[in-house]
Image 1 (cartoon, rainbow, N blue to C red):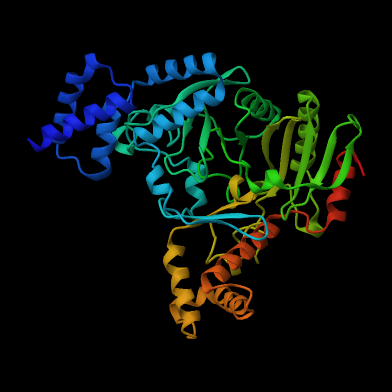
Image 2: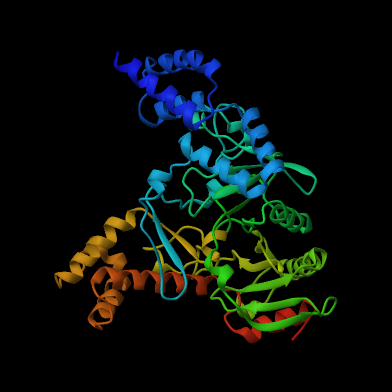
Length: 454
């Protein structure tokens, strides 16, 4: 009887929230009864139940397309995101519990307690390949409905980018509001070429209320899945989007287009125009110049025996004035001093962030590992008790010393506020580590060589 009442409640929920038709309710009730009696537990049970109660992928596609055509892209993505929350694929209740705050230097920091810390770039190159099922990697569309990866309730929608089939889905453990990924239906490695830029512009033409960007397709600085072509985007204005141009430059070919160096700790060039083709040409010229650029004095090496090291991370938004494409210059070169990357977070900051500084962090939203909630709370207690760091917390010496100094300055109401200021400062310095040009004059020299006028 307990199961019957639970089934009754689930069917009512699916009717109200998941668009379950009355004709299908008895059938679905029997399917849920079988799941409850199967011995599945925890997340697997939830995944199985809501996968069964959700619309079929073809119905999701049709419903999304109908709303898109009738009410526009914002209404369509609103419907899809809310559906993915209601069918429990997007773990919004978990995500809402993640600590998150804005810093005085313009960054946003969140501690993601829902996902494990990712430290192995070799897995990214392999694409986190999966055993069993039809999918070649964790983001292939063939994962839809695959129980072994808790994807029974995953639902995606078809989109077209560059006249090729892609699909859009939301991340179950998103880093920001309506965090989603656009994924190539063909399982091919991540890459950035002129067509990538076309695809990004296509996306914001279709979904002008979202930003979209592509991780640099290189180990250590790229995303966690390099084996499958995909982009990341969603419905949040990130700190980078709010930054202003500090130094204007000009394209020789299109001198009337706004181009400039961004006032940002990383190395970023912004291109602004309502003329799509001109933005495309300028960004692609910049890409071609950067991927072949070497400057041994600055530690920049385009290619060596270990492969290619330069790439861009382009990211696009659409405003009332047209397009804004931010081109972030990245390098994954290593050295004896910096085996994790010369333009990566330096070792003194690894207690806070050792993972790749990817597209989202490069835009000023830092996703810090969940372990920090407990570790930093302990550091705060030690400062409050005026106790030294124990040996097991030696990696946090910089954080301890600087937070203690901030708190003792009297500018913060409590130690936790001082700690948040410290995290903002460290994340800003990490972005400075990623800057491939530390001095603007060096960047200007590169841009002159790339065909820009200063």
